[in-house]
Length: 262
Image (tube, rainbow, N blue to C red; front, side, top):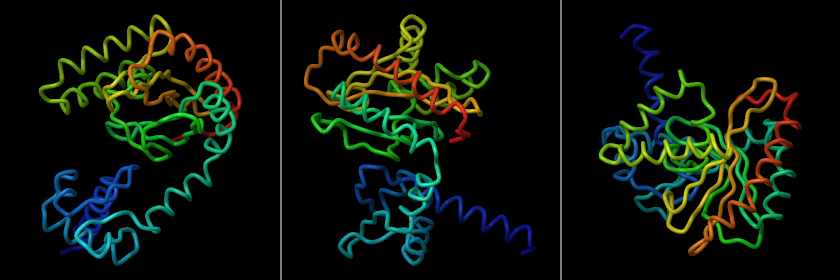
């Protein structure tokens, strides 16, 4: 094997190792090798080898000495280092907390990651029932308000191929996904926000809008949401929309001189 082949092998191993780590979501549910195989699409032998390696270097640990794994401190330290070095997460926190407390909702700022949206900042009122979400949570782009708001904010030349990927990934659900995306885009054109109710989780709703921030003019999405049995979405929308838009304007202002590359 020549040097180029060795370098390619190392790169592929790193890529696959990151795929395994990426399979763990913010809910922190432990995963077995079989579950990791399903989530990553990697061969069983490869996953087994990678989990052993990731345990040895401190990025995974066994749960109760059994057959399931969870992220350990080594992996969490990477995310912590990102948050500590990221001016955006520090600057937006007070504005988002104020909005969350005023509306009794959770508030999130999200950026894209493949076909998902990832929360880079999250705040919630202490008085609400909410999803088990937080910084680092991944939500599907195609079926959540925050994802649809981000898609709407993209230039058409960027949006079209991403939409094609999302619809291909949706399989038999593609017609419904497309219909809901079109409805969300029309909602955003008419009102500046879009909503999703019960699509990501039963009784959960979200109201979102796109936001462009920083010297880099980086597109993100700002979202309010909660879990509520039979929510009155007309009243919630009327109450939330002006406050969400005002918060977006404030965030755009305070981040205007910041490099906001996700």
